[in-house]
Image 1 (cartoon, rainbow, N blue to C red):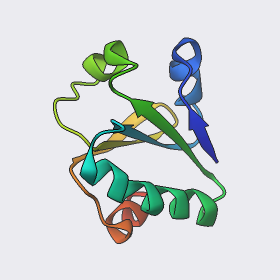
Image 2: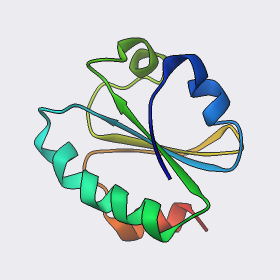
Image 3: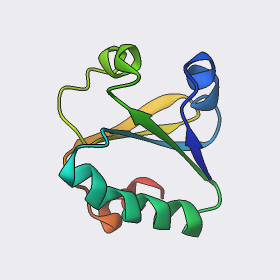
Length: 99
C-alpha cells in the first residue's frame, strides 16, 4: 500500500507494522529510478506500508529525520527506525530489511 504524505498523520502512520518511507523530489533522477522498485515492493508485500515524502513540499519532516541527500529510504517497524539508506537502493537490499 502506497500513501502520499499528510503531515498531520505522519507519526501515526509509522507507528504500526512495517513502513518504508521514501524521501524524494520530483526533479531527482535517482528518485525516479527508485519509484518502480518501490511500487513493485508495495505490490508484492501486502504487509508493507509505503509513505512517499516529497522533500520540497515537506521540508519540516525531512529536517526532522536528517535528510540531507535524496533518495533516502527509512524502514520503520512498529514506529522504530530500523534501517536508513541514502541513494538508489536495489530491491533485494530493501527486501532483506523486511525479513
